[in-house]
Image (cartoon, rainbow, N blue to C red; front, side, top):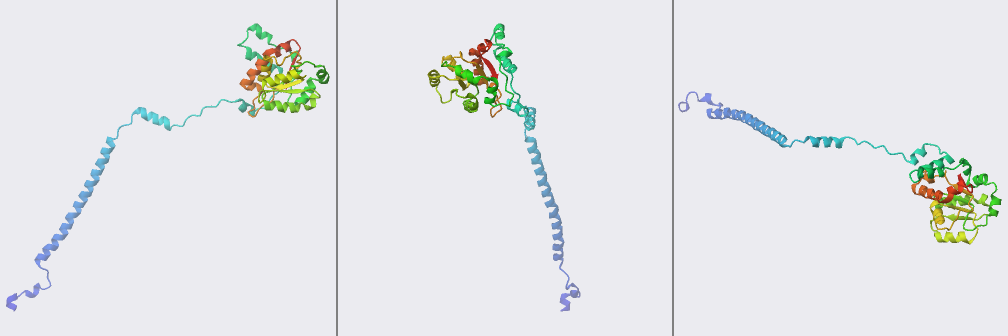
Length: 288
């Protein structure tokens, strides 16, 4: 047996075959080769992705300069416009001042400045004797009238003419009319008072009431009073006192002369014969 196997047969036991060694040496080399290939593939993919991004960025259209300025304007905060101060804003931060005859005279002059000639404007100027003393904001209507009409009891007895009144109180609204009539209770005595406003009362009904009996005091709005004078339902022959509810202010702190439509009606009323009666010393104006 020893001759068949050779003398060195025992030395070959336990040693790997040459073919096996060749395979083992090949395997690590193959592994080493695959690793750089994988790295190359990853690098190629990343480069391709970067190229795509660059091409995508380059393909985006450039923003025109006009659009850029518009975008900048839209992002800029808008400037707040200064609001014009209203009568309410001004009066809310200041104490109300009582009206005086100079205020009424200035209003009349300003209103008719572009509607009258120079000579006609001079005729609108009233002397101080045409005015009653003004309310200093401490009076009620009754206490004010007691001060400016001390001989009221005698005057009301002498009044016998229909379709006329001795005292005319002019205010801004129907609600204010009712409020002022309530304030007259301690002053009027036996005098008859009539409401002269348009709300829920037809002008024909007021004309009939004035013609029916003797009325001493009329309280109402300038629009309805002017309409009654135009219709000859109310005449100014017996009129002695005209009191304007000058100082009273509504919820928005507006006086009667601060509301354009009421101011227009008031100017029409004064021009319909009240100013003329004051110039002739038949009537006197008061600011309550």
